[in-house]
Length: 170
Image (cartoon, rainbow, N blue to C red):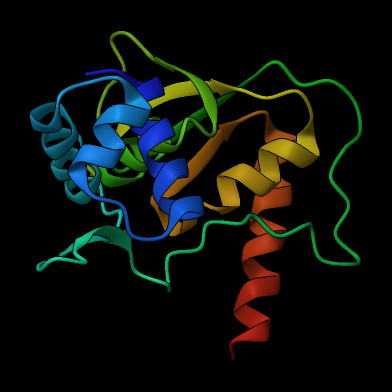
């Protein structure tokens, strides 16, 4: 399985509307069977891919699928400057989504990390980010399935973002 191919498949479906397995196979330069396996993997990762049967059938994404990451709300300031790695704890589904999307980048599991008693299935590791603002935006896209452990400043920013979102939906 190629993460690059899965991301390319996802982008084709986002931009191309309804495409047949043959069309996707030609564009990705793989077999139709490989495309079908990759579509199944995307579906397992939570991407809403569905098939339409018939002479005008094919595969497409639900039109509700939108993973644009919004900018930070006004009044919330992330620390400026370069950021290298952010240590996080996240659910298996959030990790799957991040790996399929390729965002955040450069997942590195933390060897020997003890599971959290309240979340034994969650994994600990780190992602690489170019800045605090990008880190906050991309981690926010993973929703409540991610916990920032380090750096402490980013953890505080994420807590502030969470409070802001809770206030908006109260």
